[in-house]
Length: 203
Ligand code: 5GP
Image 1 (cartoon, protein in one colour):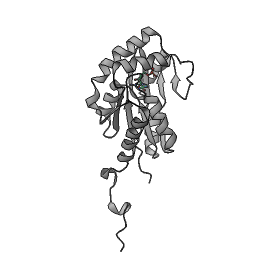
Image 2 (cartoon, rainbow, N blue to C red):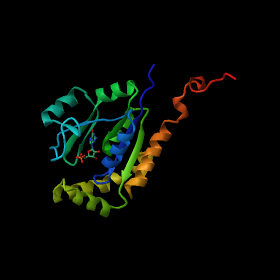
Image 3 (cartoon, rainbow, N blue to C red):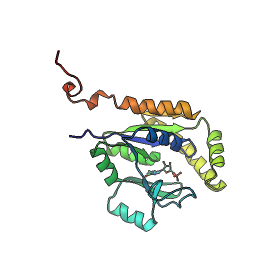
C-alpha cells in the first residue's frame, strides 16, 4: 500500500519571495507537487490558466462553494481563492507530497479541519522590503500595493499559528531553511508504524 503524501501549507504576505522559494523546492523534488488554486482574480500578464491558477468567474466560484468542492476558500485582497478538495485528497492518497500556497485565513481553516499538515510562514525582513519587492515586481498598481501592504501588516500577526517561520533575507539561506524543513518532516517517527518496515532485525 502507498504511504500517504505530506501536505505543506505555506503562507506569506505578497512580496515575501514565497513563489521563488517554492519553485526551487518543486524543481528539486519529483514527488512534490503544487496545488493550483481557483481564483476570481484577473490573470497577470505572465500567468497561465491551469498552471498559476484556474481563473474562474464569481458565478463558477460560488457554484463550487455550494457543491462543497473546496477544502478551504477565502476572500483575499478583494478576490476569492480556493483549494480543490478532490486534487488534495487524490494526491495525498497516491503518495504525492503537496505544497499549498494559501493565505492565513485558509491555513486556519485547514488547522481546524485536518489532523496533519506542516505549516510554514515566510516573511520579508521588514514592511519596507515587502513594499520595495512589490514595486519592483510591477504586477500591481500603487493602490493594490497599498492594500497588500495593509493586509501584510494584519497577516503577520498570525505567525504563531504556523509550525515554522522563515525570514527571507536572501534566497540562498531561506531556501536552505525551507529544504531543511522538508527533509526533517520526512524523518518523523510518527510516520513509522512498525520499525520492521524500515529496519531489519536479522543478524
Ligand atoms: P496572489 O493574488 O498574489 O496570487 O495571491 C494573493 C493571496 O492569495 C496570497 O496570500 C496567496 O497565498 C493566497 N491564495 C492563493 N491561493 C489561495 C487559496 O486557494 N486559498 C486561500 N485561502 N488563499 C490563497
